[in-house]
Length: 114
Image (cartoon, rainbow, N blue to C red; front, side, top):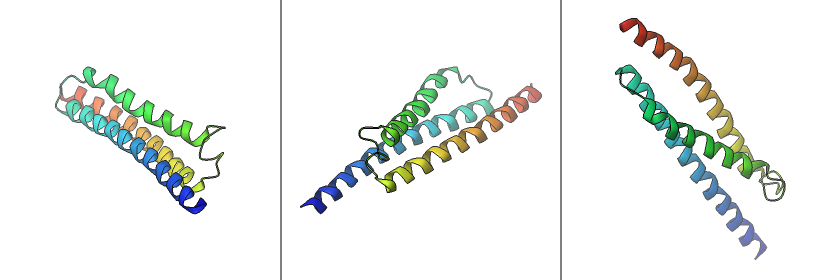
């Protein structure tokens, strides 16, 4: 019985993490739309708020689920989910760092074409 409860608890934790990944992926799609519109020299101001929301909120939720002292994955010693969460956070920071570099390059290219 306890093995079944552990398996169900791990599955629920995976579903929570999967939902966070999906929302973060939506933020990445907004980021791609911003770059596409920049390349087409179209306005991007209307995408900034949803982009920031879809990048910040899933990251915050994932960090809360990872490090919550009462019910977090680290506190419950659920190292597999914690490892996946940590890997996703590292990838997110890396992708955002690369996006900032590409943003500067795209802005410079659009200024040169004008």
